[in-house]
Length: 405
Image (cartoon, rainbow, N blue to C red; front, side):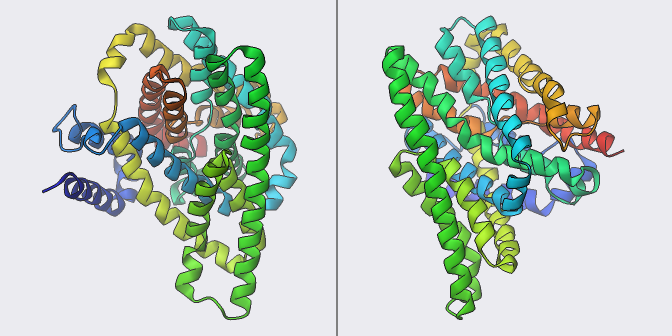
């Protein structure tokens, strides 16, 4: 019995249990979200528990986490893009500009200030950790705003703005993460020049152009191929899966924000493809996302740095709690009047609280370790991610019920 056999048995068994009892968990045990159960399972079978799943036997745990997070987030943002018409992005451009501009900067500043206040780190390190935890996680956010339970209780206008934000800001966090990384590596003047070229021009602009061209081209080609009878049904079902994997791979090779490229590709594909195919592709994408999400949180749970968390002391726990309370909620209460889908204070409170921190932050935390050689970003961010999984998982169903009433 090798490590692969053990991993397949553990992950396959958990996937079966969670997928066969998804509605039961939501209705009967609402505080146990799937990300929480998967993370707890990872802790139980990982080095801190039974020792059945040890990432170090496969290679560098940080490298494994980075690749798992990148693929999981990539499929999550494409799944979001397939549910958002391109017209929605155009019609809500002003709203999204507020959420993705001042909203993201406020979350970055608040998170960095909390880290600098309670932990003994350099200012650019605090800014790096703040940037890592800024993006709203598309994986956990999807579990909150999708499904029949959410559709019955959360207005579509709220679900769409939260989904669009979660899909876009994962890739748009790339420039602020890279700014902090470059500032830690080189003098500020040189860092700014490299940042403008590498992070803004290549990382964002090239990502948007590449994603748009790829998504539009594949959507158009699929529609034409089906019109001429060149496609069979199984091929149609796998187009967006192949598109997601290709864009993530080529985007990484080009040095762009591959997650942003994947989101844009999904939007343009959604616009150009056959509408009937879009609905089918969305279902396939959701199925693939479910298959990836549970293993991602299991791997995360198995890799948690318990010793490093204890070394942070009370300051680490304070940072995690303060970020959950003050990273996002105050900004949405202040900016809510400029976000048209938010029509009341309860809308702003609901949307302000449900900005979970998860796999997207995990991706940037592992990138920070690779680029800086320091694991402080991973240690602090993993603690905040774990706190978010517990807090947002436990409150999702009860607060959604309250909000729905």
